[in-house]
Length: 279
Image 1: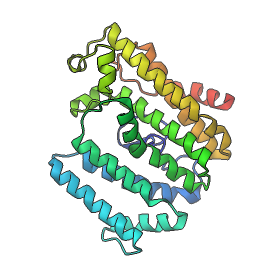
Image 2: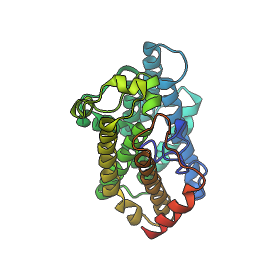
Image 3: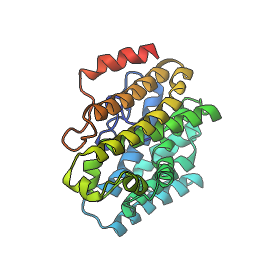
Image 4: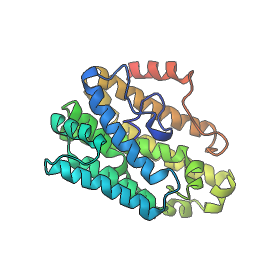
């Protein structure tokens, strides 16, 4: 869940603004570790998404990141300066290296894969693009039990899906469609409808279906926010409430994410805070 690692001030906006680098809920002793992981994730994501590099150039740069992780795994000194701090964080907190490799796999996939045949294929992407973030957070808090990880995966994947539905227009501009092709066919929606931002009953039914599925997944993982103690538990409750609020906004606009991209506003925070307290 790249969204969980973004500052919970906004569930799904560009460049990890939801990453809790300076969150008041984050213990001071964990902030350097979170910042190091953030720098890794953001810089790798930028390689996949930003600038004018060719696909081959992007993949080569991501391969360079993989080699740095392999050096860390072999207890060798990384070549890149920014990986020295990351290596210390990984060693200090016994973080699973496969989570970092999974993120790189997802970023590489974004370079070359623009469509998803079905929901299972999309979930496999989320397993690598979103779930590793929750795993890393739980390891930082030494709370990575099997049950906690399962619930974290549900929250992370749900937030990734919510981000997809929120950013359908933005992703279309990048020539990406995360809506599963099987769902487009099931509801009779063609990609030309995305291109023209046309809202009709078929589109509303499609977005309603996808939103309900994301909400069910979010709710299935929500007990984790009550199981984790103190500040991390409350931060996670706020993240869950942020996801719910975005879905409410999509519903209120009847799926029109083209002209009314759902975002958390200042006035949403008191509502989210009060809901988090009542969870």
